[in-house]
Length: 292
Image 1 (tube, rainbow, N blue to C red):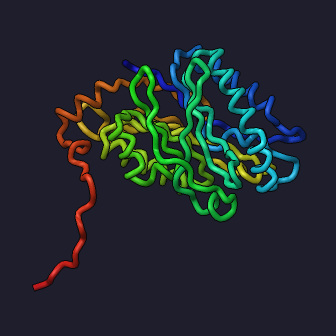
Image 2: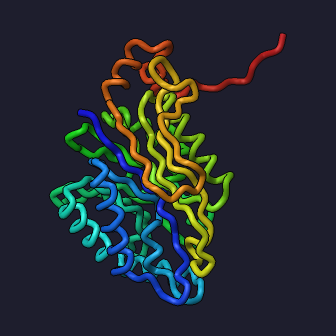
Image 3: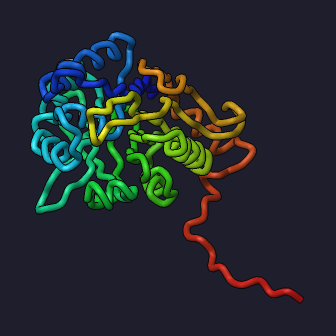
């Protein structure tokens, strides 16, 4: 079944003299979802940590913002569930920090049109997450059953590690949703290059949803750089650079892409190469070369 996917590079907005808060975030989420559903989108993906906008205070403070976000996370997910049900849409509203048994995990809620929810945790932390935010690794990669087939989610840095995405593809995922949050062009390019590599080696689609915008009053979302994009196989029937669709850098508007999983089945059996089939089950042992 074909899928019309909507990708929002959520633009983090300066709070100015107001504190956004949970209700303001939920109102904005509802408005954005309404725009996308009116454009015919059936599934929506938003960036990593985008909901942290609701936790911004008057003075930038990482610990306070994370604490506030953790406290608001269950209510934020409930708002998102209500919105997904109201608009009858598959919704990944961004990732949120959840505190459990003294640890904080970065979790992506994936919500069905009936309001039910399942989660994908981030497995590998960047330095600022591990050293400054104290985010802990969560549950292993999962796949999500949908009417469009199985979907995987790889949160930002996780996308840069082939075995994580490969596990999802081997479990039947044909599309990987990649919510990301990067504060430098180098950071975004690492994610984009990883998306291209995962799409090439698995002959699948990878959709990247980054945060954008400048909000100096936020300690957690002060600088955000990226461009929404979808990468695919680099082979027959696809663009020679693997780009299925890409928005402009830091463009804040929805990017809509119509995806057909049958195209992947075709390239996996009739392509110039068989990356998906030839992917090694495990790397061969490496030994020193002998000069003679």
